[in-house]
Image (cartoon, rainbow, N blue to C red; front, side):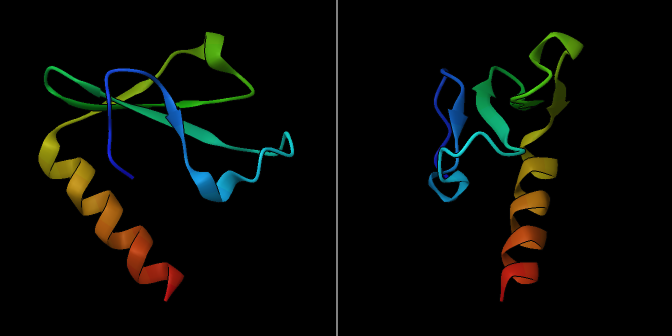
Length: 62
């Protein structure tokens, strides 16, 4: 998923109101948040951590 400065949800989420995570680009890497609990805040990652997360998720999907 290519990150932008706006919050994005994966196209694999399906839009059925399920449990989803949103992500956006920040000046220091990426931020992630729960779509059902946005008020709880977000988790910030460095570019290296974001890349490692994507690699792990892609490997788990195979």
